[in-house]
Length: 286
Image (cartoon, rainbow, N blue to C red; front, side, top):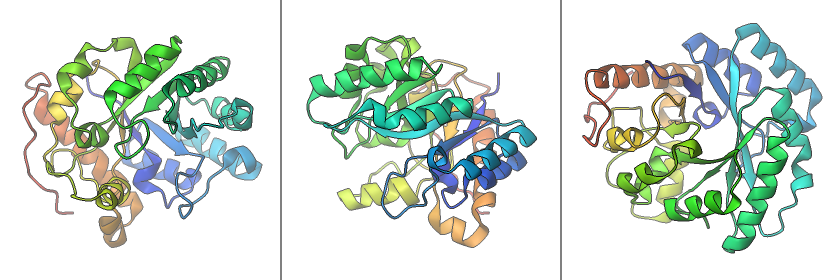
């Protein structure tokens, strides 16, 4: 069985939702992921929950292309988190037919972030959405153990744990620990490649994650091991921002190359099950 692929918004963040949906459909994706809450102050804002005209244009493009929304991001579980401040975003996510919401635990108090995540799960569940906690190396929820503790503590049927192959690798996680976690926690995964050695500074880690990832099979991450420790058949969200390449070839071509490389990677892996064998170090030269 071939994986289903989603185009993550970060891969083509310069494209507003209607344009990214068109690019994803042209390239051959099944899904898109939409960033409706900006993560940084200087990135584009696509707040469909506050822009009805853009929402309607986005819905028209989804209907015209047949693409589906896999996930919506991002909800931060901060110390002063108020679930009702996110009602409009949750409502629009449901209106778009999204399946999953991405959350980050931006709070050092574990008991409090568990309670807030449980509240998010309950609100998402009434809208037929899962809530998936993502750990990010430089945040308060920086590793697999803490993310798993949040999901376990919330104890909700629609709670999930989102694995990003970059953050998993940069947090020096063990695929054996990943494989021991409940299979029902994993609804999809964010996938990219990167050099095996991380940048030496925090600024370098953040820059690389947001601007300089690599297509599958062109770096040195243990993609075979990570993905082999996840359930078979889940969708893969290709979150592969390549800012320098985008300046040369355009965002639409980056979306196409990301999908092409993923298909090539999994075609090469189809003759053997996913395991802990590191991928090759070949590079694409578009």
